[in-house]
Image 1 (cartoon, helix red, strand yellow):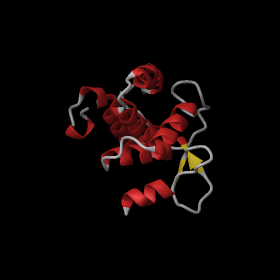
Image 2 (tube, one colour):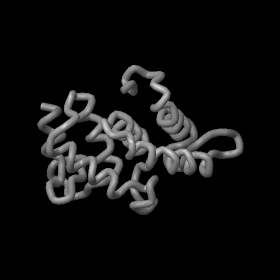
Image 3 (spheres, helix red, strand yellow):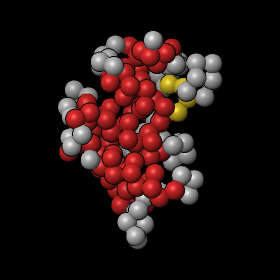
Length: 144
């Protein structure tokens, strides 16, 4: 049922995913999270994955293909890192990673934390820290 829900949440016109099936709004972060969920469910190929992966790259704020107005940027980055990292072709990850790391360096506060005022320092630091360790494979879930 989860697989069916994710598949039916995709906008077939542009490949991006929505939070609820009947909600017309899609986002880069939801697309990343949906693709990561498909991968976790064992779905690495197929039309939803291909369309979604193209949409992810096409609207990625860390590669300069989209604006920084995308909602839930840190959340999306965690899932985008997983999707790019687990892709058979590592070129998209190698294009994405430097932009993400550069933004982290620019956004890190003097006391070491990351965060937006909306969610606070703990959430921001935790999610950015998790994302930065994806290519290290410390968590089995992130291993290729």
